[in-house]
Amino acid sequence: MFEQAFAAARLPGAVGMIVDRDGVRFTSALGVTDVDSQTPVAEDTPFQIASMTKALATVAAMQQVEAGRLSLDAPIGEVLPDLKDPQVLTGFDAQGKPQLRAAARPITLRHLLTHTAGYGYFFIHPELLQYFAAVGMPVPGSLDAIRTPLLFDPGDRWEYSVAIDWAGLAVEAVTGSSLGDYMAEHVFAPLGMTGTGFHDALPEGAAKVHVRGEDGALKVQPMFLGGGEYHNAGGGLIGTAPDYARFVRAMLRGGELDGNRVLRAETVAEMARNQVAPLRAGFMGSAMPNLAQPYDTFPDQHTGWGLGFLINPEQGPDGRSPGSLAWAGIFNSYYWIDPAKGVGGVMMSQLSPFGDPGALACFGALERMAYA
Image (cartoon, rainbow, N blue to C red; front, top):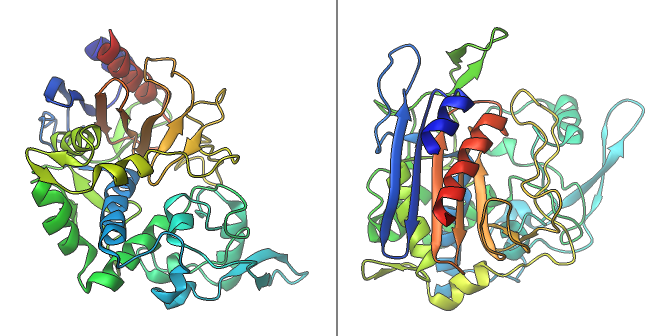
């Protein structure tokens, strides 16, 4: 099923894995790391996991909550001065100058981890593109790229955003360590994730991002989300499918794997609880469809958001249970975690733009296999 879906999807390469609490149930590596070298994809090929970084960074943030260094509901401006007096963008004057007002309430870590802080993404929200056009485009990977006004008052809406970048900076502020060093010691090492980390350049042997030309042929498109001024908790990690599968298993096991615990079971349960009701979460528009097309995982469900994850309230069409956790990376990588059935899966690929129908069909086949 997975091989047939992969062939129909015309992806350059992909790794698919299905796991349960006790181990790996299925794994398959198909295609090539790039169409130029024709190097076969291996099970442990590194991929830019992009926004799949967010869930791992949320684990680091929740470790600080457990340790009492961070609070979910205290003003995060006490830890991050940049967030102390947030301003909301209300529009632009006749000359195009941004119009701002003070936010109605402080931003909290809970707001950041649930994408309800008020932030956005320039590739999703056209008003942020307009804001940068007025004040000057920041250098990619710089802190100025996430020093944006809010689009709404904290807590009022759900909008996918740079908020997790700020949560990662909060971890750095209270630990005195770089995010990469902290996560290497306290998240990756305990979980046995030996091939995951922040890099300043694409590692040797890593899969490369591809696009489809006008003739439909795949070609390499140099795109790299790492490096820059800070470790990007929202999307900067490079990792392997087996590594991410170990994280999925740890979440299925309530925060523990192979005798090593990274979170308390009650913390994992809180992360898996819908934090944003009655708001609906999960829909992303697009200001740059060549990078990410409009996307909604379950358009017919009133999906929620936990601390780090999309939550489906009803059974998914490919088999996942109500209350499952999921998200994705912008280069068409995806995962899900089903605590009710004790099963989950990961699919890594490197294709732009996000939301590719073939990649989604391939991931759907992987999920159907898990419940067959």
